[in-house]
Image (cartoon, rainbow over all chains, first blue to last red; front, side, top):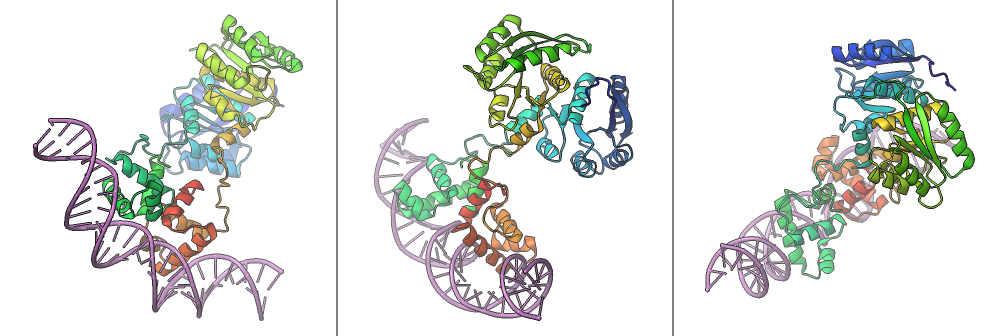
Length: 217
Length: 217
DNA sequence: CGGGATCTCCACCCCGGGGTGGAGGTGGGC
DNA sequence: GCCCACCTCCACCCCGGGGTGGAGATCCCG
């Protein structure tokens, strides 16, 4: 099962930056058992090279002109299941981590990584395992707090208004909220109107959305 | 930066099964640049060995008598930050994936993996990167559906109804949805009524809640 | 071919939600 | 003591949302 440490691993590169491309060709070529069989400057060219050489692994950047890295990953995995994909990116803590992995990437590394580490990731990817940069891993484990979730509503909502908002998010009507809080329905309507004005909401549907996005539900 | 391919990597093992332990000692010992400096049969013994040898990596099983793998991982990472932890388990698709990684594990591999793959994971872990078995990765990407979230709405919603529901969850009015979908407002109302009936919803607020809880927003 | 599911649209009714402009009571801070 | 923030409640208006009961057009499947 590919046990020989010198089993030649074929690799295609994709990166729109010339220096990165050339650097990788040189550095990876120095590693024993790794052969760079092609280098492309955009996603489309990478796909062509993969189709031509059927490499073990495609090592690709994310940001590229035309077909981007995620799309390229998806297509490679769909059309050439024998080729694994490893993403090498400048921005390690990118929101594209999850999409890329869903698209079938078997690795996410920083351009800060040394050639050895990249080589290991390539071998692991060809072997089925996935290698992740720590920042990418933490992205995976904290499923993206959307844009902001300071855990307290940013607008100047009073405690009572937050309480009412949470009940709205549970799908309760004004009457139900009134009973729950043991106040009059008119009072609830007042709170509702106030919090709508403060948070810039038009109706309860938007309020529920707002509550979920701010972690109040 | 640890560039020499033969930099000796010190490893402590922990596994309660004698054969696995002995097998690993032998197989890993054969790999160039890896030195097994100790092997323990339970978590407590592993901790003692880590304290004694300060190895680069602890390779541990999860199910062990006494201190289990997750707890051992947590304590190693807390008390010996210089020692990385890689989990090697029989049950790849285990619910402990997330806890283990949260506890600081830098790898999750199957006992089916070959020695080479394990060696690579050990090196990657010492280097800061995380190596995951595909099954473990998929665990990470589907963040435990809590109680239920089969990713497609369980009720018999038609594609169009799901679409409308998603737009409701964005806080749009019927009129806005109509324009967005390029249909009449009456049509939207029909879809809304149908999906409310199917999903057991009373109003849009509950619909937004429903959408969020089923991952449609 | 006939039937069922889906998408499209209409008219009509009703009520709850949202907006406005009040008012009284409490408490804390200046 | 005064003011302000907050919570409480009221009356009134209006509209959009939700419910009912249709109907025609496709499309696919048996």
